[in-house]
Length: 180
Image 1: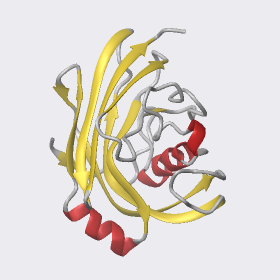
Image 2 (image 1 turned 90 degrees about the vertical axis):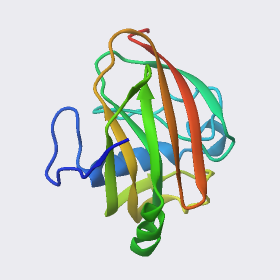
Image 3 (image 1 turned 180 degrees about the vertical axis):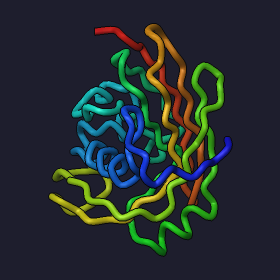
């Protein structure tokens, strides 16, 4: 559960800068409610609209606990937010004061990256579960994230648990890696 600050200039094949990965995650998470990977309680929408560089995973909207099954390509690193927020600087500062959590892969604790208030732009679709306007949105994001190297082919259990700002996340994934 160690939190480490991200390298500001990080942009390797398995990591993106905080503004870049938050833009990808919030765009992915701002799909319509009826096919949204965050509000999905089974995992049937986890593969929808994934970006090229990383495979995104979701927490929940409060329907705790959530169990999902997701097929994941064998060659992609994973990005899992423990807790995250898209708002403004003041809200992020308050949110991060209580941010805590963990990500486990097959029982092994993953290193968390703490992201303080970072400006970014994302695209929200109509009917998203956050009540956000649609189109391009300029925001400030923050949170705790786990970057996970591409897992080996086979089945894995990934657990996301966290809390911040009165929100709690408790999600368990059965990942099927390398299956078509």
